[in-house]
Image (tube, rainbow, N blue to C red; front, side, top):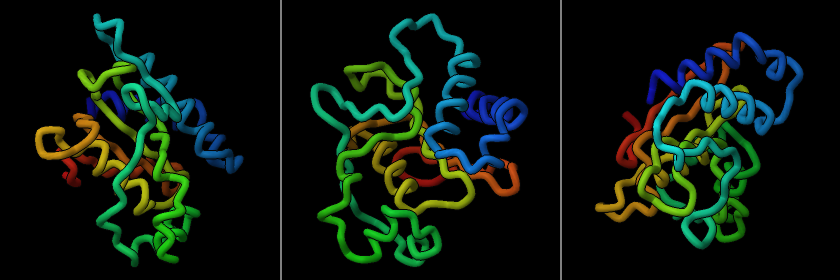
Length: 171
């Protein structure tokens, strides 16, 4: 799975890195990487999907349990979500209900939650990394989603940087 994600990002850099120059919204970047993931992800399982901004979980919506933030790292990122964490506004964050940037999964169940991916254009984001820890937390240890792999991707001078998460922790 790791090689598939890296391959999709390499295809994005080769074909669509102008989105980084144009300062396009991260959703445009996520979408293109999602397209490349679909092209690289070969399986006989027709139930597996690559979805961007997918907010559903079973019959409800995805929610995050907000804990474990490094306030210094939030202060470096300073995105809207990280600023809300700094301000102590965790109870009013819109991301309590959230949409991961890219998921590789089977819709409507938790049987095949393979990968969750969060993307930022140019910097690390503490909030997104907390989301990936929550998404990859093992269900047998209290996690809600049980994705096998979480990936945080950001770009420094068009060079992709990666952080990998398994079992609710960075590996």
